[in-house]
Amino acid sequence: MKMKLPLLLLTLLFTPLTKADYVSVFYTGWVNPANNLNIAISNFTVPVFLYQNIFLTRTNGSAQAVKCDVVSFPASYVHRRFWLLVPNETVAQGMTFIHNTNPGLTQITNVPVPPGYTLWASGELLTNMPQPNANIPCPIPGSIANIARISNFFGGILYRLQNPIGGAYNIRLPIYAGMQFIYTSTSSRPSAAVFDREVSNLLLSAGPEYINIRATVQAECSLSSGGSDININHGPIMLQQGVTAYPSNDYTLGLNCTSPASASFSLKGTNPVSGKSENYTQCGPGGTCQLLFDIPSDNIFNQYSATTARSSGNKNILIRSIYQPNAVPIAGDFTGSAVLTVLIN
Image (cartoon, rainbow, N blue to C red; front, side, top):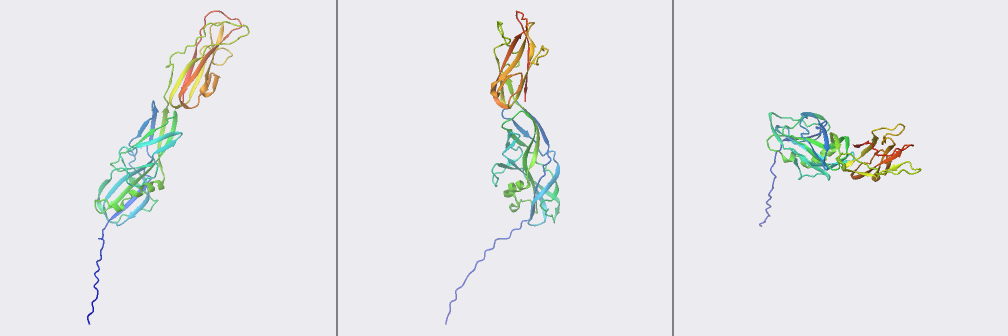
């Protein structure tokens, strides 16, 4: 009796074993304390300023290990790269700083980045280790190491100030910076060791560092008089029984500020009158003149010293002189003078 037995042919497919030798370490906290930037901003409606070579003088510094991944220990090469995560907008002391670009860095768009941020990276610096290390330890997350600056990185950060407000400020702009080190047995960069997809989360979890900026923002304002004399003409004055004050017509002085600013105005007579406030001045031998102004847009009326609210655009300052004759008036022409001081804040 013949029996036919089925023949089972099994083909076993094996994925070739690949060996990747690397230690990959990610550090944060290296930048702080960075340079302090002193800037003076004036005559701009939309100022742009560059914090150039922000990390250039930071030759070395303490950094905190936040993640380490080890596949194998032998290493002959080290790949180093600087990472920077920047908020697209930062509001500081009422002003909006818009992050424009990072000269010297490349924007990274092929990895996850949280909304409202932009991720940047330096070029990678490959270094041949003179003495291969057969046992590179993996630092414990949270431990501190002394890290040297990557020699090929001279990047800056470019900001645009959207709504400059006149004044002197100490401003802190947050950034998230990290250094990546990948130690390998060959000069090839192992894709398995790359933390690129994790970079944003690693940086955010470590917390921000700050760019410290001492800024003097000078608002651009102009007066319609152009700084020339203001002439107020009373014209003929006919004295009347029981009337002690004769106001001139208002002189309209225009103030225009291209960025939010407050302005302080004060009037002071050049020939003081005894017993009167400083906005009085002698007007000939027969009387005195009182100087006052209104700023209707700020609900300021009949003042000789006042400060406007912070705003931009146009304001009208209505200036007048009020002639007050002496008990014994003297007929004839008269002149008087005063000084209007304008301080832009």
